[in-house]
Image (cartoon, rainbow, N blue to C red; front, side, top):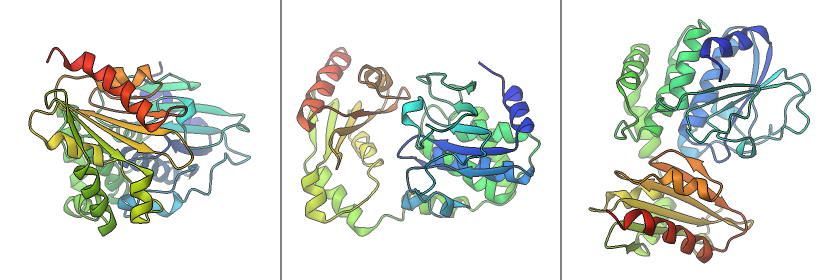
Length: 322
């Protein structure tokens, strides 16, 4: 494992950088990438976003968000370095690196990270990758400004659940207190993140909650987004990553599972826990990853019901003693 100063030295030594993150990027992935791109450009470097994904609609307020358009999916011919942010393994990177001949720098905070880069900095104590990027920019002596601070604050807010989760440490709050000095509009950021849902999203939430199942003596709640719901509401693309958190609002629930049928086959699972259950351990068993209290899995060769049965069986083992 490399130190943050060693990562900074590599960034100082090279000129052209492609910055990417995990597929289906969230606030931390997008925030850390956009902050780092701005920081590198301020140093006279050539930096750009590589992403198969478009930016989620609730993150479109971020500075430079228009550069996450899902069109730049490959490394440019002259790229020296790819910087992967907030991504646990090379298979989940939101880019095509087949033709890349240069270095890969891996910066992350997931304990399940595969350490896949030529240079790696993984800090599992950080609340968000944005927290690490903040420290990296300090190491690079980048001058902080409102736009960069907005991106970093957004990533920290989303990955800490608005500072509710136990990963929000004293270091996290110190960083946020520094960011607030740059007059970021934190009230507006919260509104954009959490109070800007399209009406059709509310209808989807209603359907998901109406068909939810409370299992294992009320310790586990199961939620689903099916293709039937998507067709019924005529939804083309809509972010459903936050729906799993609704399950944790139920009293006595320890684990919330959200399954979503993928249009091209397979099933995606989002897992959340409230107190003592390690959902990352379950995700690891099925080739997924994440954090102790938030994890995800992509089941490529499972049906909706077989994936549901496998997850419920695994969680039953964890919850039986609670």
